[in-house]
Image 1 (cartoon, rainbow, N blue to C red):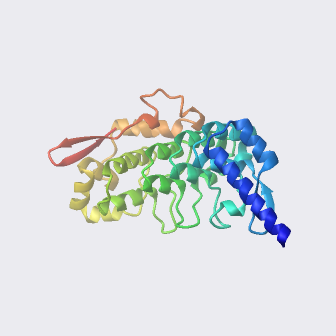
Image 2: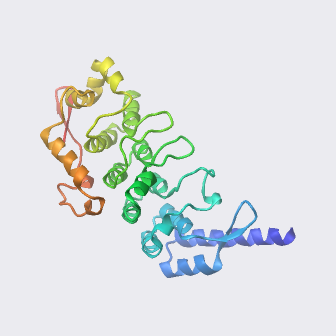
Image 3: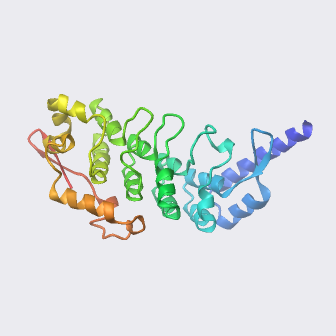
Length: 285
């Protein structure tokens, strides 16, 4: 028992040393030497374990060590996206957390690397990976991006195949969540409208739970959204020709080409412009 206690204490020391080394963004070769030869973490079942590429990538995400993240993903490919050990998850049912951590900390560049690596999955595997729901609230990465107002993360996920129709445990889509926040008068309305605009570019069919409420309480929602956006979301008018063209482009462009499109067409460079005419807010793309 005393020997186990000493081993656990040693693991805690070396584990913290590795955490500090990633936090301080030491060179990649130093971190890999530490990870493969010197440091261990202590599992709940009493085992001392070396850090896997997946677990090291989580540290790189938290501390935005982009060079280390690039090395792990290029050297270990999909192994860097494996399920981490139980001590790195909030519960045994938690899905692979790398995308969620990238969104939570707004690590746009590392998220782009992860999504580029995820193209090695089959189409079905990639869809499952991007649309997995977390264990706490049943939120997907898209829900999290909308909730935390991460428009760049949101459009990267959508551009690489995440479904805008994915639902949480309550059956709400990310669009439902944004509209519910707007109904409650949540602050930061401008980035919420940006996120809403990105979602609409990837939603050729408008399927969401609050659509009936928009129709039933038309004056309120028209004031919140503006006439143009309200009519579009209710299905009373089609999107503009430009918006339809951009929806077609986002559906047809393969994920690998998302970053090579001309700047004025790349979804990441779109901005939802707001023009005020009297008291009405118009959305233009």
